[in-house]
Image (tube, rainbow, N blue to C red; front, side, top):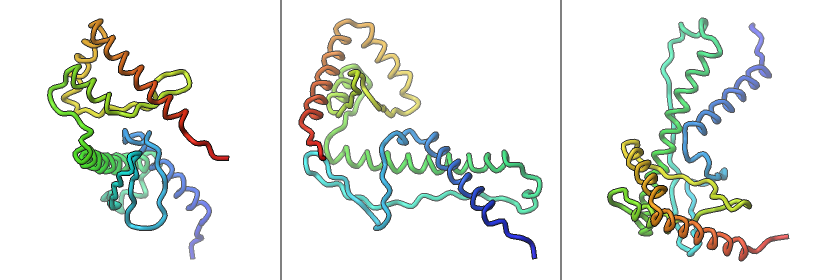
Amino acid sequence: MLPDFINAKNIFRDELFNYFSQRVKINNPFAVVPSKAVVEGDGAKIIREDGDEAPFDFKRISTTIEHEFKNIPNQTVDDIYKIFDKMAADFARQQFQIAIEEIDKSTKKSGNRTEGPLTPKLFFETIKMRLIPFNEKGETENQMLILHPDKMEDFEKMFKEIEENEELRKEYDEIINEKKREWRDRENSRKLVD
């Protein structure tokens, strides 16, 4: 009978799982969003500041690979990592798609969305709707704007227009300063627990 190297298999399994998890995070723009493990149940709910509740069911995410047994003896560790890279990219794509669908549903329900051609006015309306966090230096933190890749060039032109037009820049700065005041008020009204 061949020996079974249980400890070595466990170390290798843990290493691959950690690698896979890190690769999923790299491939998913929502990885910066804080998450919490839910150990039982088939759903959860988000309770918003206004008391509105948004229940949701968990969705299954899975990814598979096809691999021929005859190739295994010739594989290197790098080959295995490449397989895990493909799986992680697929997994992250599915996570991202689910998140976008949930955001779409939520913003339709709440009315917290803007639609139309990408203009400074529309951009200003959008950021006025958002809760924007700041750090202790007064700089915005963890800001994410998701655009279709086809719209990136339009966004860059629009933002350049804001930066170069004194009136638009002033309006943008005023909005950010108002968001900073809102953030400070929220932080100051928080109840700290011993």
